[in-house]
Length: 528
Image (cartoon, rainbow, N blue to C red; front, side, top):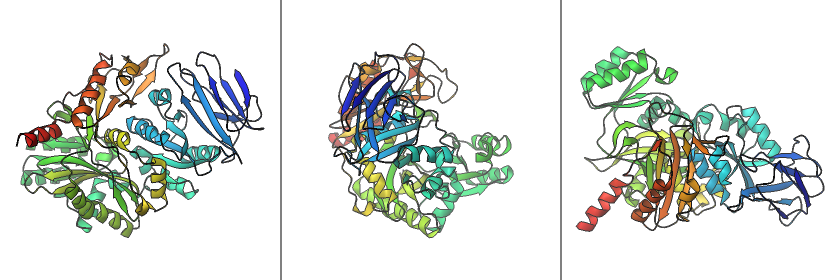
């Protein structure tokens, strides 16, 4: 173990080639140890300048930032101490909950926030850890509120950002807020906007929010009779959370009957499918709309649009998302105002009136109807979309930590967001076979080379691990989000596909036409 004494506020560097843990000592009674896949990662406190058992750390006793410093994988540890001019007590320690591409993008944006001093991510993943965008805590059970609270109190966490929906529906935000830990994410009751499609639909009915016509059923015979009366195409949805697989767009009556039986008879989605929503089929163009909400007011984020279907030309089964771009030309400023006035703000006011103030991000899945050109609400998610979050975080120039804290404090009315000009695009690289069965453990090479093609390229990891030889391997369906900025969508697209082609992963695949709708509209407009 390498160790060195240092004055409060100083910086130390250790080469990754040095074996063992590196002990960084600061002040008279505090130190840190770093260990990771290759060099560092696990952090715990010990007293004095010798390794010891983990101890609780008083908030603001010191602050830490650890990151991969350069291509040699040197490690830089910096900190300030209590009373030091280098310790900014308005800077915040942030814990991001989750371990996918969305969370990697959030860590990336938070690390760049001037007011953010340390970023933890639980459980995180190998790519997040290797990037240096956050210190991953793989052993923290994010569904155990007591464990999360204990970690936050030990490390002086001043903001928790919850990425995935499951911990929100389970009530993690409720438990954190009860003990005074600022948390960006809705309560369990407010998270029902995503957790129950029936709840969302009933809210729309009550507060005149435009949405597709629907009925809710628990009896398969009644559901089939309704489908027969309405005709196809028609949409069958599981009421609860079904990992993005609970929506079937049935193009025939037989497909609809099969979907109903799979949910209500066969129990394909367990309790999530014990109730189904039968919804009219809307024809038009889908769009994603994001707004930050502080319980009473809301501000829109930049527009983004994703591609849900697995195949080029928007063909094949739905997925969690195969790519996205921002801004989305279909969401004009005029349409943005309509969405805010007719959908987002009535939802915020409705949730407040129901006694379930919503604090977090509202992700509205919209259909811009072909026949009217007006938006209708398809569904709500109560967290950042994935992969839309990746392009939004690439373009955000505001201090994300301060923006999210303002939402927690009910102060979004004073916030103005700043975005980089131009466009951003993400292309998802997935394991062959996804969204069906796929092989795990396949090796991925040349990621560093792909990122080095341009400073505007960033690869966000959704499902990677490290094998014993130090290689990245794929461990999920959607694995990488290759992302790039450009002065316009064409440049962003060129950069992102150059990077995708540079990645050496024979067992992976990707769509070749991300952004085709927006590019087609632009080409059509230019030809007028």
